[in-house]
Image (cartoon, rainbow, N blue to C red):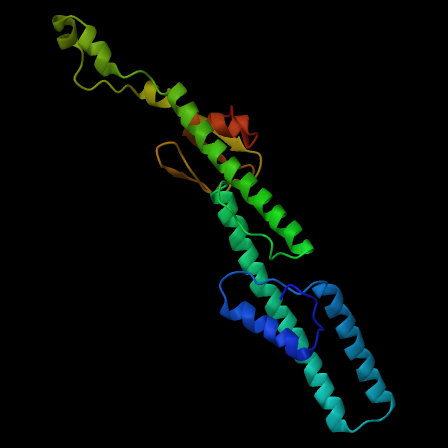
Length: 226
């Protein structure tokens, strides 16, 4: 279907049939969109001529019905191709080194495809950077384990340590109270905890690692109120 063809009702129906029955995106005829515009313009002119020349009602209804069907065919064709292009862009974003055949894309579809790939890449990059920042912040803020310190103490001194030493102030020190400056959708913390969603002006007490990420990304500010 690479060579130029004359656009008719039958050819449009065949193009849609191919798009429906084949998984991969089909190559459109050359100058497809321009030819379709001309064809629709001619059809509209025909309808006006039929009306002005007072053709039979049967002929008028036939032409009107065909116009309605043409619009359905074109809309169905667009939506099916759109779905395939979105899938192609998503696969390219997920696997950047993969080879995606874009020779079947029309010029306007190529721009759409490239925009989708860029959008998916940006969204994925933001999500990965966000989780990475959380993980790094968590490691920086996490206190050193007491197990090693206890092992390094003399036996007598270690025995003198309380069996369960979990002072309240340590828990408080590991948390911060922040006020959100914008709406934040639900997200996953460094230890797979689920937080949110939060609304702007909402106050929450969260782990320091999570707060630091939110503060660095200007999503929240420290709340000093008691």
